[in-house]
Length: 265
Image 1 (cartoon, rainbow, N blue to C red):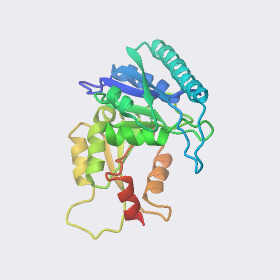
Image 2: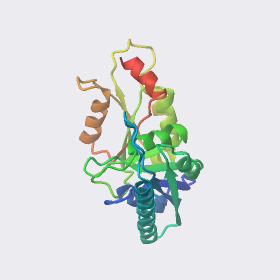
Image 3: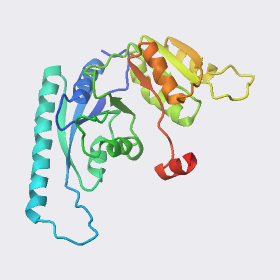
């Protein structure tokens, strides 16, 4: 069970339409550890009608058949989720949500009061429909802390050693606060600060975040790492691999995709 008073009591997971369903298995394992309720959301994606330069009728039978197949796949995923929940011995429920042309309002309604969303990384060998857009909807439309599960190698959540990517931003701080229930399960916490070449200051870099986490009774180490040519993100990933970290905490960008494009241009 989680250490005293963990706030993680309601977890939502996006159930993959097929494959190993690693996200659902990991979420069930985490729910068992935290004593949390798990809700599985299966997404039925309606067919997107293509736009042609020359207008052409789309057969109604095709659209109906595609819709029925999507619903059948979603219901089959919920049945698989029920088996995962029963095997883990947790309280769980499955819900079906439909998405038409990328609208995730049905998903948002079902997860909005969850403490954490769990979703699988898109597998290049077995693509889930609209997965990248769905991840952004969980983060920015639902405003949920989101645990992204790699498409290979992870079936259970091991909180042993965590790396926190810290840059002092509000996004980083929000991610750390949201992760506190999971951080309480960790044996060691490594805060990684990428050297961005900022001018020196009178404050010790990372002192504030180190103190904050120590006040939550966490075993914290703060380390500044070099920003190699591959960029800050890859530097953090390399450190996590070198330290055998089992998970990471980091903030998502906090402005719109179009502004991100304009800033990067």
